Length: 282
Image (cartoon, rainbow, N blue to C red; front, side):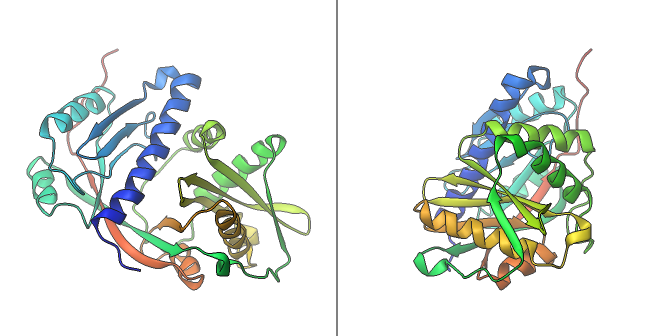
């Protein structure tokens, strides 16, 4: 699959919309977090809450130049919140963007890979595993959150992901409020009746965003991730999606797992972090 700037814009802007919807959920449930969303250069700047993993600027300069005025406002708003600005810059963005950001004091923090797979009726595979996967009910939301947090706190150990550290409470808040984000479908995987895995998928038009899959450490290596992926791809086909995308750390087991299931590397994002922040006034 060939990825150009137009495809990257389609994918990154869908992620920006997802983050903005989480910010809106926080605006309702946790207004003290002071969520902030601002369009910039074709993308979105989204601040969800203090140290949130969803705080990011994404999708910018794929078909527009850098709006320095908007960036200055973002830097002020985030600085007032004591938060460094995190920009996820596609490798397909305007080449001048990287130089402009480093000139402003941004530093490279890490990379993430965006992978995709075209979808059609042939995507369906027969499930021969012992894992059962079902859509989580509202009554199971707490179980889904517990597994998601535990899996995130115990990543696969390859050391390939950026060294971000999040508190359990921060992750719990994020996963709790995903219940109110439009288009999200949550899944629970079971082995011998025990809930051991979780995943999510968001439908954005004909794009399926695969997000937040995790397995409890004691159940890893038993086909849970494969089963969660197969179920989401089948549901995406049924929903009329033509493309499924997923973001992973470079060289991780997650990337290996999805590439074994037909995903291809589309492009890489460089993660750039501002070096200057100011504390919010009391």
